[in-house]
Length: 347
Image (cartoon, rainbow, N blue to C red; front, side, top):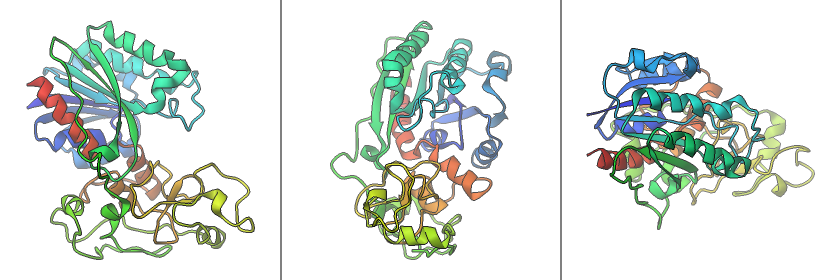
């Protein structure tokens, strides 16, 4: 077993992929969000979880075992191509604390995950600074953009995966497994009940229809967190006018809201992978998240399916908090593919 530390852990999407290889022992996880930490504890009961600012963690003092791997992704809002990308956003410099963890613990390999926008932030200067910082500790640093859909996640989600290694061995990024045939939204959620506005159920609508659904359902007889958002009358009028694959611009002018982003009020496509889901996948005015077959936004469980969380994975808090936990995660199936490449390197 290899010892692992998960920083900026969120709910544990990244750690879950490593856990599923059965080759890693997660010694410690850290996040500043209390609900994220509670959810992490539910799914990783043997891991010490520190819910505090990372700057307050004395790594060398509290961790006595050799750490083989450090994984994590500092908050990405400051890097995101859809955000303001302000260089004075304090979150953009949390990588200095990640650097401190590497300096104190000297793992053989680290994984630094973030949004694709990190590579172009400040005309690429931020990534160069980050790379130079990690290289100063002796790490060979590489970066590659991976699309989760290419690895069996039913969602187009591009993330930059930065890996640093010590020693002479070269790290090989995982080869895509689904590049010729992506899984679709239908593949992901067609066994879940087609709920109407405000409805909820714990019953699956059918038996698993494919290997993806079998894998995520395991032997469960009931499903949690499948509750449709309860949209108001005016919003329902708008939603009903959005065609499959359509967005704000496709709504007849009479019903079209006066404000919104490019992806606002977008309806997903049944026979294609989902677009990237965010923390707002329950709010049509903020994201492309309308169900292809139902006049409503996605449920928490549908969002979890799209992110490749198994149905027995637990989330914590209100619906908006659970959606935040899901939308901010690394899909576990993508994480597992990377973890398997890390195992090859460590061996």
